[in-house]
Image (cartoon, rainbow, N blue to C red):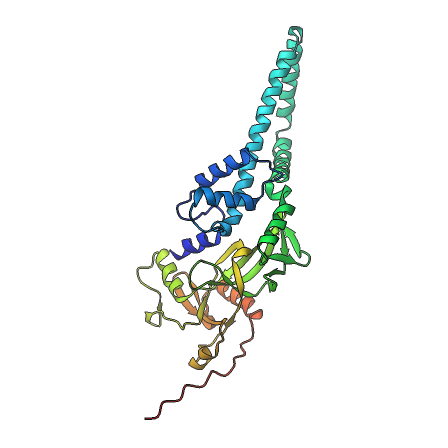
Amino acid sequence: NVELSRVRLLGMAGVFPDGVTEDQVTSAIGTMLRGANWDEITPKHVIKELEKVLLPGQAEGSLKPFKKPIKEKMDEVMRIITAERDGATADADAEVSAADAAPGDAQEAEVASAADGDEEREAPEHAAAGGADEGAVDGIGDSATDNAQPDDASDDDDDDPDAPHVKGAPTRMEDGKNYYTSMTKAGKELSVGQDVYLENNLDVPYVARLQEIFVYTFAPTDVYFKARWYYREHDTHEYARMLGAKADVEWEGSRLTAQQKELFFSLHFDENHADCILRSCKVFLSIEQVEEGTWRALQGHEYLAWRAYDNKKVHALSALPSKKLKDAYALESKRSPTLKLQAPPPAAPKPPK
C-alpha cells in the first residue's frame, strides 16, 4: 500500500510504525509524564524512552520520523493530567472549606453556592469562548514542547549537526504557524519551490516539491514543510488499485511504462517534519514528449516529468483535463528549473571484428 507506507514512514499525525498502536503510545507517555518534572523532560527524551519501551532491539532513532504525532500526543496527555490535577486540588480545597465552615455558616455557604451557580448560568457564552482560549494558552505554557524548547533545541544541535532550521523572518503567521520562504539543513539552503529527496527507509527515496516551510508557534525550533509529491511508475499503478481500479494504469491502449528518470506530476500534498529531507534534486517539467537523447542527458539528481497522474489516469502535461491540474501545473512551471541539458556521453565504440 503505497499511500499508507508513505504516511507511516514520514510520520503523519496519528500514525505510528507497524506494531505500535496509539493506545500504547498514549499509555507510555502518560507513565513518563506522571513521574517526571515537566520543566526538564523534552520531546527528544520521550522519543528515546518510547523506543526502549515500544521498539526494543530496534536502532536508535526509529521513532524520529514520527516526532510530530508524538509531540501532539505529549500535549494531549499533558492537558489530561493537568485537568486531573486541577480537579483533585479543587476537590481537596472544597473538603477543607467544608470542614472548616461553622454549622451556623452552612446556610450562608449554600446561598453563596447558589449565587455562583446563577452567575455561571448567566454567562455560558463567556465560559465557552474565554475558556477555550485560556485552556489553549495554559496547555501550551505547561507543555514540554514549550517550556523545554531551549534545552531540547540545544540537545538536537549537539547530537545532530544536520538538524533543519528556518532562515530569515517569517512571511506570515496563520493558524498557530509561522511561515518562511527558506530553511537550512546540513548547511544547505532549501527554498519553497525547490525539489527534494525524502527519506523512506527504501532504496529509492521519494521526490517532492516544497510548497511551504513553517514552524508551530509552540515549538519554534522544529521545522515542518508541505510538499507536492511526484509519483514513480509503480506509484501510479498502486494508487489506482487503491482507488478501485481493476487493472494497471494504461497509456495509449497499453500498460503504462516510464523511463527510469521519469516522474509523474500530481495533486497530492502532505505535511511532514523536515528531518526526513535528505537533499535537493531537480525535476524538470516538459509539455512535450521527451526524446531518448534527453533522458540520457539527465544527470545524477535530475528527473523529468511530462505526464501527470490523477484519479486512476495519466495525462500529458500538454493536455490536462481539469482546471485544478492546469492551475497546479501553471504554478509549478513558473518556478521549475530550466531544462539545460549537457550533451549525452558518446556511445561506446564497437569492438573491432
